[in-house]
Image (tube, rainbow, N blue to C red; front, top):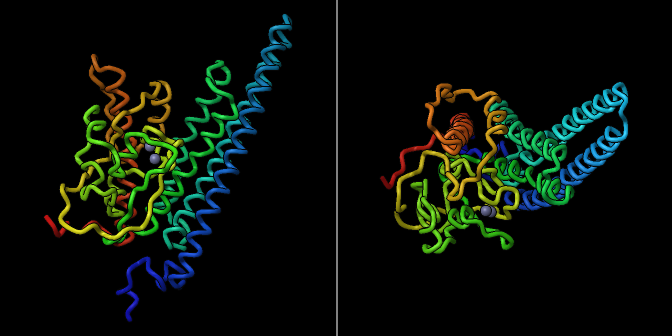
Length: 344
Ligand SMILES: [Zn+2]
Ligand SMILES: [Zn+2]
């Protein structure tokens, strides 16, 4: 058979390294296990880094309180500043490694054995840069005494963040137009967004929210199944920052077949929006926006009278647009441009 007639990612195809179905499934299971290890590693690194910095900051403050000497105070402040810089860089390196590893494992779980290409590297860069902002916020909160829970606990939550990269990798692994995935909610958490996506949110609960999405409850077939391209357009995977539960999310994606019958709605071509959007402190939102936001028009002349919430919503929409543009670009590069839906 001519290679061009192969689906890009199916047993025996070049992207799988020629592996057969049994091999691909066994390796996908191993990738999932290794993803758990990668999460544990990132958690341990984050806990170590933040706890160490918190202790150093505490001692530094005690020393400052005890020393009236200006030269000693200056030296203490300089040491703290240097330590903060080192901590930040170490946390960024841990995130960079974890995200790359998780993304690769996610691709493997999706049967794609190819190393990341340039577009995927670029996507990973944006994903981790968003996470870097949270590193700064955590360090700021440590210095301001605003951590709000045991450091270890919050650091562990940050360590979960790499899981998102695994699911992005899984989604990117195969953007064929006939690939379908089911959003399955975890047993441990029940946030409205995840239950909505899985089709598991009772209508009474849904009625409490102003739903900013046109994609219906449980997707176009109502059963929590989406085409891979559709999820890419929605720009959402388990553990996504945009979900209400964020890194507490315990959902996963599973391979599925296209549900029978006609879809109940048209494709939503804009990113999924949380039913209960989180407020992001404008200070950090601005830092997020400062990062390279290519292909997204930035309105620098926001009209007076807009509330903080409006500005934040706009900033969030910008970031989402970048991610969607990336996903569409990836799909196009893979030769899997979304064909017209035959049912419309
Ligand atoms: Zn959730
Ligand atoms: Zn979830």
